Image 1 (cartoon, rainbow over the protein chains, first blue to last red):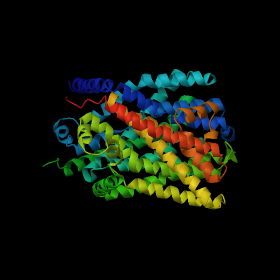
Image 2: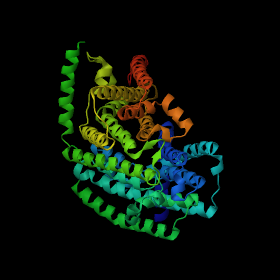
Image 3: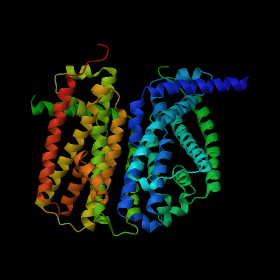
Image 4: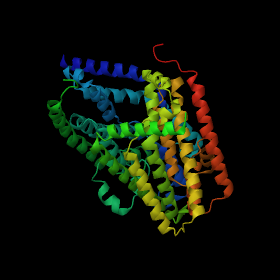
Length: 264
Length: 264
């Protein structure tokens, strides 16, 4: 009984958000295009033969960057911006009355957006293979399955971090600038612009203790077949999720107590 | 429509937008940290490219830093003026408030492009200049008047091109209504401006000098800075900038003919 109720809730939420997202097809296509920075980086790497110095062949590197593009496409999170707008506009109050944490709504929104984005990402990958036919490969089913899970975990970590930041809206109103600050290390340390394997030693010594390399580098290495420690990667990803979830719950309950609706 | 009147109006714009931005003082501090981290991140990325190579695309590390500096200045200008104002066009058109802008007894392009200012971008401009001064020291550039004038001319042209690109994309909102993400696409393409154009493959180089003139925006000013730019390139940049400015103006006036306000 309870399960079917939860199932129905999830189904309805996803359906509503999916039809909502279908309205914004062009937007999402453009957004997918704006994620092609990894390909430009790849161009710098291979055009200057920089890959030979880090012992990755040009083909493996191009697969890496393609996978980094894919992982990024399916782990983009913008919950801070939605929540900030909703809280500034006073839309949060009606959400709070409903017997459903508003973050489920945002979560469904993100999942629905990923489903809508999927075909566009495939088209971009198709063009990538036209220009780089030598890098075509088919990952085995097991690898594909594992990398989908690790991409989802990466998405979950980022979603939790951003939700925590979003809850700061209860105190500061403009939390998106904190998110922009956090985005900088994510951009440079996650492996989106350069594989973590190429980082100098003084960075490598501490970077694996931060969540960043598990956001893009680990799933991308897994999917592209570059060497990576699979079990350790998954363990740390799950550890981060387990660590961040209670923090989010705590800050959420503290925030809702602090919450004063707009105009009251 | 005298110049005096425009200056007077602009002073008022400055006053009101500064007053509203200074409401969020901690935001400015966070933005400063973000700007510093972002510059450090790109220098870090650059150092990865150079860790085993003396030069990429015939640019040495010290010379590539100049491009970073110029990019940072231009990015600061974008964040201070272009981004807050031109993303507002989208809002004006969606909500139908463009009517109020058009009714005002002042040029609509002037009003829409300069109404707001985000002071935290200015910090980025200062950072960029600091980096450039450092570059003058490490590249042993001797300053003289002709060098400075040429540099200022090319930078001014870059700003004009950048502005026109942003303005073009934002103007298309009149037809498509939702082009928030189109500016994201532009932003990700502009990211290329952080690296010397020669480090890309031939086809990308053509693309980035003909379709999206990023080559003109950062590479030519940097070449002037180093003192090895040919005169024809500078002249070409001036012409391109003028063509861009002129056509963006024409495009705006043309687009306004298609504007039908919301709910009418």
